[in-house]
Length: 548
Image 1: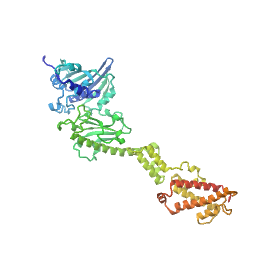
Image 2: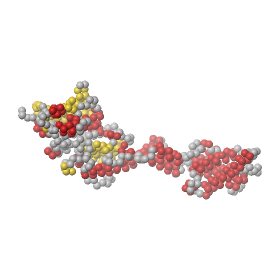
Image 3: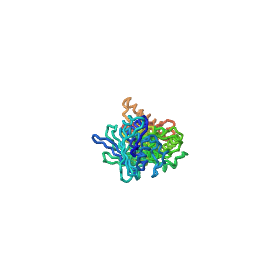
Image 4: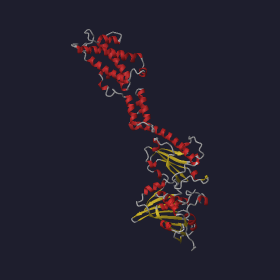
């Protein structure tokens, strides 16, 4: 046993490029240790971030099977071995290995210059302790590194591995909560059989769980796969093997929270994205989630090609298998987007009357159909989450269509003979200006008949006879003392006759409102102008000289 050695054979460039360059951020490096613990059938992993004055280190300890001296040599210190080929793809407890390429240990040199390992194999009474130092590795001869080690008796039950990273390269303090959430986003395997707790200076332990990755996100709608996708029509061969959840929120997500994350065997294999879907829709600002695609990480699934990048940040989307997967994921997102748009629109329409305090159906049923249609169309457009129009523009257009020019403060300035007519007021308040003006003309004609006592059957002929500059006219508006007053008399005659011939006859007698609108002969603005003219004629009539 005294001749035993620990040997690490390598090319320093391998560690430089595959370790330091690829795993230079803390969460990615720690994730490799967590994955190793999972593969070792650990049930509990404790991560301690030590950040005290003059001491900054990181320790990861698990209660997995641990390693013998031979396994340290043949497994931990050997770079680039494929554990799934050399050993069973599943652990003794049936866990599918999350690691494959044997490069994860290099991640540790991306964050620290010294790695201290203590491990004890389950059912053996010996612990192995050794240290790997980056500078010593660079200076070693013949590309073989012999780390110093000790072998000691350990009669404790079970196995364990404890890895401490010293001489950390980071200069800033640990972000305990941020690191915990970042780790949670890299896995989808936490349950009662695999517990991971992150401590800060041996205190404030935070337990990782699958929901932590989406903490702070308030779900508005959610779709579980496959339960909510039974109507999705697809021939993708692996569609029944996928599991997961897609979430949409009420408010837009931060950019780094958007997208669907892919996991295989409980470990991240593709960062959040939308798989080539056009992202112009608002939908993508509100959407996140994850899908488990274990089949993508099964050996011999696609020959000898690896579909997962070495640092497990993305799939190789240029392979036949992943091209089919991407196409299917686009179908899934298109399906969710359609359903989201429908749900969001219904929710917006349902919630608006509540927040506005308006009984929408009662309100719309009380106004003319053409006005109600304008309002309904505007509300539909605003409620549409993918509307291309700004809400303010939609509202402005609808309001203008309902309340065009001349309608503002119009009613309060009209003659009381108009505003005190119940029928005219009702029609006006409903926005039915055609009928309001028609009723007002009838009221004016009746008033003139009553004052003049005329029995002339033709309304127009009556107006021509009872008004005018001739002193024999039945109604005198002025003293007719000069040309101005005589002109006023003549004006009342022709205005009154014109209202009858030019408005009352075509609107009330000869054509429908729809026909007049279609031919462009009368508009709502024209009707408001007629009301204003009638108000003027009523004013003159009320100020008449005779008959009293």
